[in-house]
Image (spheres, rainbow, N blue to C red):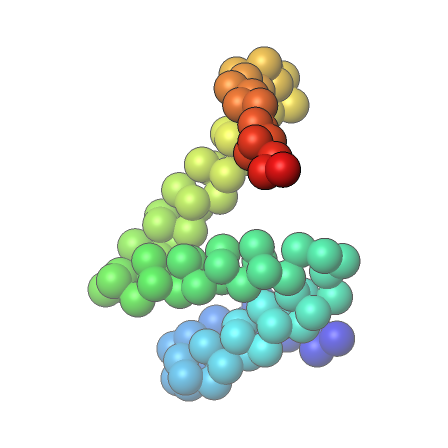
Length: 104
């Protein structure tokens, strides 16, 4: 896995070579997705959604607020599922199959 540079290096990249920083972010995301067991599709969708939201931001602080909001929303959902699972249980209406009448 690609090592994460120290904070000062990341800051320098953000100020002087933002394209290279974005490339590093994409590479680290892809490595994390590849290392996950069975959640690749969900993580790929999550990263895509994050990238779409961040593309609408016009400065680094806005990007930070948007990313934190998305994380807070996911953590709230996870907390609710863990602490109040009955709210996520859905009862399904079971419809019996009827066999077609057999022809003689």
